[in-house]
Length: 75
Image (cartoon, rainbow, N blue to C red; front, top):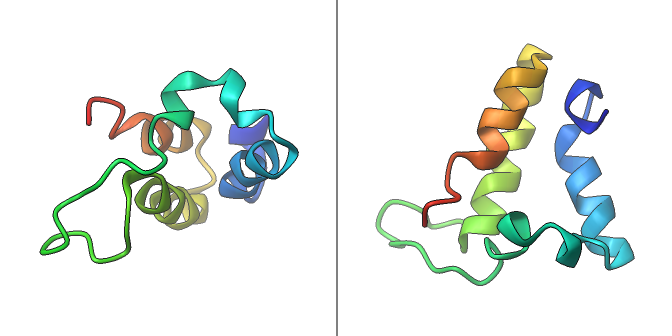
């Protein structure tokens, strides 16, 4: 349902604020994972992913939203 909503990044933020994000290890592991500041001055992988999700919301495509969420799981 979060991927179909108008603000998918807010769904992930809600999970984090409620303490439930720990149940989603792939997303939880994005927190505090460093990135090269030369290319990603915004901070860790979690912050970057939330920004990508916020940008992807413009297209209102749940598949794109899911891809935006998962695009850095390999880091």
